[in-house]
Length: 448
Image (cartoon, rainbow, N blue to C red):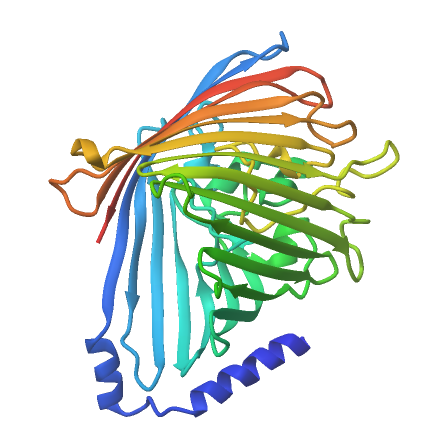
C-alpha cells in the first residue's frame, strides 16, 4: 500500500509540472500522434510421441490471426499518452476446440477461444534525461518480459523511472503491479515446477490469459504487493555492455541478475569479430516466503565469433542442485513473469533453470543478403544434463531446431518465418516415461 501511495505521489507531481488542459494543447498532442501496429498470422503443428503404452501418439495444430494496433500522442511539454489494442482469433479449429486435445492451446485464450484486450494504456513524461512511464505497457527485461513467442505477448501494469544523467549509464527504478500472460504461457497448463522455471505460473498458466492480474495471484495464487525493480546498464567501454538488475518480489523472493558481453576485432583478420559473455542469477526467499525456501544459483557463459554474415557460438550453464529432502523450488531459478535471458534455452525447452541442470548449446546463423535475398537462417542444438530431485525430468533431455526469416523485397515491412524444433526422449520424473515431439511453426508478420 505504501508503494502504491508513493507511485501516486510521483504521478501527481509530474502532471502538476505541466499544463495540458488547454484545448490547443490537447489538439497539438493528438494531431502529432502516430498510429502503428502489426498483423500476424500464426500456424503451428506438433506431433507428440510417447513411450508409455497407455498414451497414444497424436498431432496437435492451431491457426490464428491477430496482432495489435497502437496509438501514441505527440509530446506536449514532455507529456504523452499511449494505448494499444491486442487480439487473437483462431480459425479452422473445429466445433469441439475447447475439449479437443489436438488443438494446440498456445495461440489462443481460455477454452481455445480468441480474445482481445486493451494491452497498453500509459502516460509518459520526459524531462531532460529522466522519463516516467506508468500504466499498462510492454516490458522487456531479463526476468520480466514480453516473451512474444506465439500470438500475443505478456503485458504488464508498471511504473518506471528511467534516467541517463550519468554518461553511458542507464538507471531504472520501478514497480510492477499486474501481469497479463500472453498466449505462449498456456503451454504450461497447471504450471508446477516446469511452469515456474519456464517463465509462467506455478498454479495455473492455461486459464490466466487475457486478463491483468496481481503479480502474486498469477505466480502462486496468493496476492502480494507486486515486484519492485532497480537496474543499471553501462556502455562506456567500446564494445562492452554490463548490466545488473534486482527484482524484489514481495513475500516471494529476491532475484539478482547480471551479465556482461564484450566483442573485439581479431588481430589476424578484421573480418573476424569474436565475442564472449557471462551471466549470473541469484535468488533467495523474502518476507512471508510464500513459495518456501529459495536458494537458487545459476551461471552461464557464451563464446563465439562473427565473420561477415556468419555467426556461431557455444554456451554452457549450470544451476545448484537439490538434495533428496529439499523442495524442487529450493535451488531452481523461479521466473513466473516471462523474461528468458539464459544463453542455453531452446526454442521450447527451458530446463536450464531446473535445479542441478548442466546445459549446453551450440548455434550457427547466416544472413544470405550477399546472394540477393534478405534471408536469415539459424541452426541450434541444446542438451540438458539433469540432476536428481529437480521435480520434473528424470533423465537427460535435448532439443534441436532451425529458424528461417525471409523479408521479401516486393512487400516492405513483411516478414515470413519458418521455425522448427525437435525434442528427444524427455523423461518425466513421475512416470519415467519418455516424451518426444516434432514441432513446426509458420508465421507471417506485417508491420505498419
